Length: 137
Image 1 (spheres, one colour):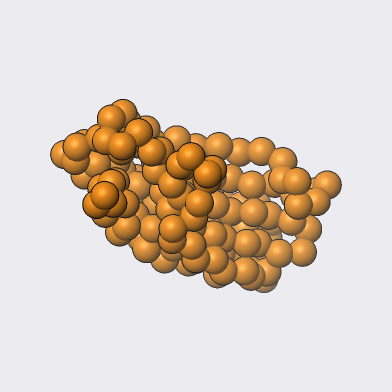
Image 2 (cartoon, rainbow, N blue to C red):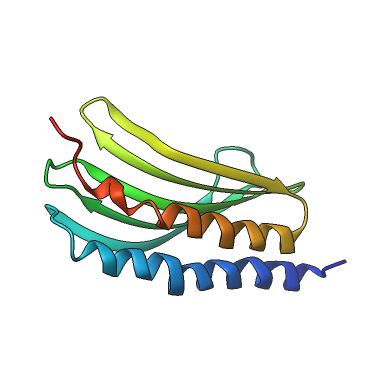
């Protein structure tokens, strides 16, 4: 059994590692692509609307394509009192709103499994750099 501080450390360390490896690599790779603005590498933490005791952490890169559509690559950790949900996605903002074009998730009650999911899903989402290219018209 993992004691509470070690569970927190385990997940935070996985997010920090994902930022230093997969997301940093995506961020630098995007600089070589034609785009309108970006990319930005960011981190967000907050309370979740999913429940009164829930919180989330999001690590993401976003950039604006040449067609002015904003693209976001993200991995998120949602923590509630009874489980840890990890998800990743690539989302594109267009005239009709925000759409996920790539989406994966995992759920667990164990911090080490959540940390493994963060690593695995961060690698998957950051391998989707092709979405910076505007689709052919």
